[in-house]
Length: 162
Image 1 (cartoon, rainbow, N blue to C red):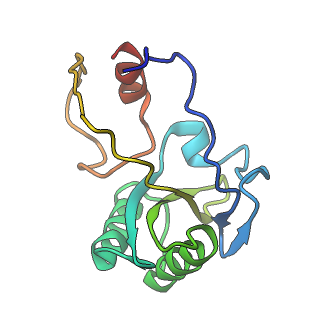
Image 2: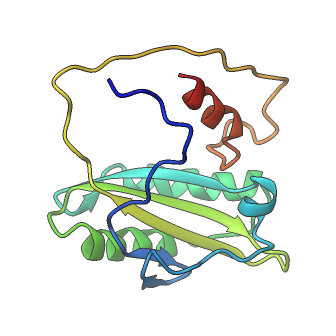
């Protein structure tokens, strides 16, 4: 197993992403400076397994994002917009029909909700998996009610320690 890295993971090799209704090059800047996920860690996401070109458990992922947007006061997002992002990004970024798409919701300083999606390949399963544990402090109750949020500083630091 390679030693842990103190650096951020390398960017995905797939150079296409979804930003607010359109496909674009992932290498282009896409976040506003006043974006809630960037400024406050106030955003939510879901990671969707794409199998044979289709999103697995699509309805659950759509509901998760809508629930997270409400809990974090990010504004409303239509189910059709989430499904469109999944379908179009899967077709453009995962020509083999297999991979993972991460969809993230946030809002800007004017209150507009933003949907961003990135794709990645599954990679190769190692012959053997290993696991380690690290101390991950939890201070108080989760304000976001258990939603998958973009505020991941504690998790990133724990992974670095591991």
